[in-house]
Image (tube, rainbow, N blue to C red; front, top):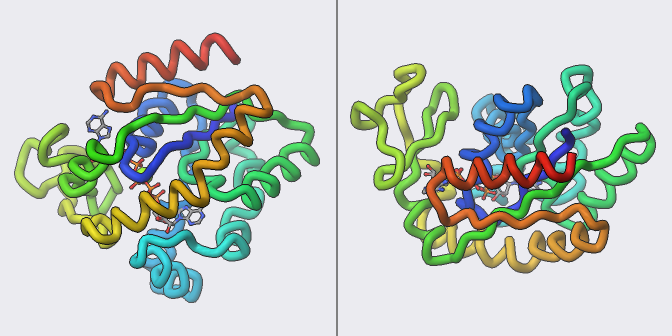
Length: 216
Ligand code: AP5
Ligand code: MG
């Protein structure tokens, strides 16, 4: 199962990814998480990436492609992989396609999570993430049992720096300009499936799974 999760910021990619990877036993490859790891470690890539992320812009393609390399061909990807937040530009999509072609592999499906902008804004401002394990919460839709504490590892819950309303508005615009064209790109390849991401997370998950079962 080689899957791409496509969708605007806050559409629920990370939330769905954690459920999909445990069902299909495939690794979760998130370029957003990879950048945040580099930022946390304070290395050169992290410092450079943070400038763009904090403004709600995409990190340039050369840095993104350099970071991801051929991660999706590593040994833990034998059963497939789930890409979350990559590709995000046509250049990245072409680069991914070339690497997979060279390795003789195809994508199974590109799952497009559809969510309206007004729903996105309320989700993003309520989001909290665990500073230790990265688990996702929401003050309205998915509250932790104890305020500001992760249910899974008891780490401190924090607000992502790029979840300020002004940055969220930029991220949505950047998504429309640079990432939305990938919907037609993958539609043209006949592997795009669209799922309504506005429903309860469990319902979204069940719809994704039944769609994937039809195309695998
Ligand atoms: P990244 O971390 O990928 O952020 P994003 O795509 O903007 O998406 P988010 O992680 O914000 O949202 P999500 O879709 O995962 O939703 P979530 O499940 O958390 O990227 C961050 C930045 O890194 C980018 O802006 C860019 O600068 C850079 N970057 C990353 N990849 C790049 C690339 N390839 N090229 C260039 N730059 C790159 O859900 C959101 C909230 O909603 C949560 O609180 C959750 O609990 C809640 N929620 C989820 N589902 C539901 C539901 N069904 N109902 C109610 N609430 C829900
Ligand atoms: Mg995410």
